[in-house]
Length: 208
Image (cartoon, rainbow, N blue to C red; front, side, top):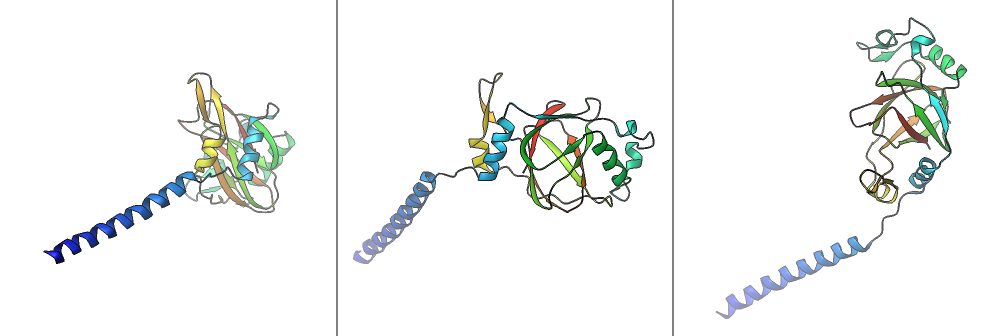
């Protein structure tokens, strides 16, 4: 009987110790404050700014009537054609985006889900931020598509960078898209792709 009592007591002590360790660990985790990163905070400030540079997209066929979607993008090869010429045309018409602490207001085509901009940045790792749910492709001069990084938005960014929604009468996350890329030295072609959650043809982006 004493053996059984001691055994039960031993089990109880072990379980209590495990519970106490888990409780303390969870309490310490809950008490920690996870701050938004300096990069995301910088992007949040840019997207919150009242000043912006507007870039209104145009159809590629306005530059060259042969630049139809089916010709510019080769589905079978998963590759783009005429990239250098398209970049020259976009730059000539001021449809260029850069990596800088500023907000670009993009007026995209209401009749199409896709549009193009010239991306002129320094080589290295860049993060593309937007206040709308969009997808992007970044295309090199040879027509290949760059592989993007993790598009997940950190929870601290979602919680700290907010804007007031007049319809919902509450704060909502400002940053709706956060996509990282390793950018080469040369100019690249930026393809904006709207989806069902984009919610409109006009939105703001910042490239850091």
